Image 1 (cartoon, rainbow, N blue to C red):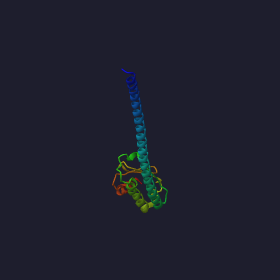
Image 2 (cartoon, rainbow, N blue to C red):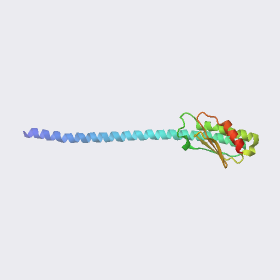
Image 3 (cartoon, rainbow, N blue to C red):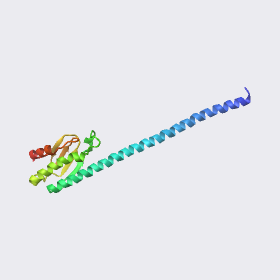
Image 4 (cartoon, rainbow, N blue to C red):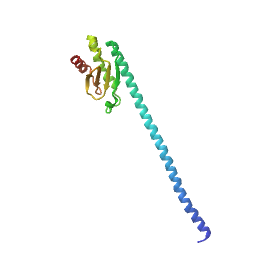
Length: 159
């Protein structure tokens, strides 16, 4: 084999590992870029969920404040987010729990002194209905449900 052909063969061999290394480097960069986009998408989804939760909590706070004004007391409200794992998108949990607060208002209108001890309201999405423990009324809503009558009957019996 001639010296020129040997040099060409050696150069070709040297280029091949460089091509593989370049390809590996490019693949690594692609993977990095893809992971950055995936992370950004996850962050955007998390931000969307947090904003939706904030809106739900603000709506529930407004409803609880109104109920408190009807009853002549302060009622702290919170959403039990652990209970809403299967809650369907597009249904407002705060709106579903508002019917229970409406029942509290009805009881207060008939006899406000009965509800003076109520100071906490927990809105849950587990469909469990109303329960009273100490000064806390918990209402487990169902999507599209209306718990006014159920909660009013429960409170009439429990108080």
